[in-house]
Image 1 (cartoon, rainbow over the protein chains, first blue to last red):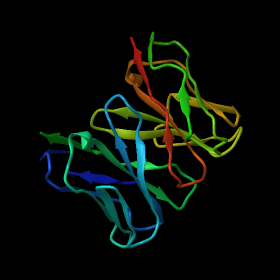
Image 2 (image 1 turned 90 degrees about the vertical axis):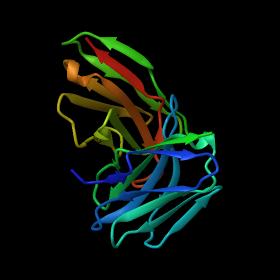
Image 3 (image 1 turned 120 degrees about the vertical axis):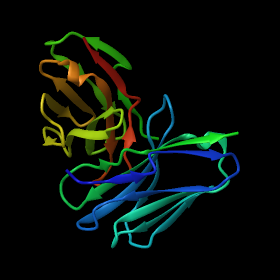
Length: 112
Length: 112
């Protein structure tokens, strides 16, 4: 079973502050790294799919970076808003015929 | 948008019953997955399928089987339900290996 670690496990952030969290994954046999947002009572939704070392992707106030050589990715949220409260999941896809391996998630709470 | 529909939102079954969880996707995606989500353990892959009549074991296949007779439908079967299979079950579909996964709304199964 592949080891995909996310930190921190949970995070309380004041509205308006920026924040970031980490996903670490195997640095060998890399194919793709995904980020998902999972809001309460909804389904997980993809934020980013990243495949190239050094990739940086952005969607509004949220961005992500990827380092496949050292096996980590950062997710950044600028100017946090209450609607950003959710669990953020990263998922690793290796080069073999297997599915996505998810981390346990970072539970983000934005305090007004 | 891809729509992934799971047949039940909530289900209560008795120990020893045979349980079917159904998942249907409407976008002709090749790949389908079943995950379970438990507190503190994150999303864990049970089974996946890359084509009709094809199935592969994930990380925790024991006590489960699957069926994919048609491309749009992927069923998860609990041969003899046990209390340790009480969990949230999520189905997902993706167009290619490593591409964005689209999730269903989840089935919360309770085995009593």
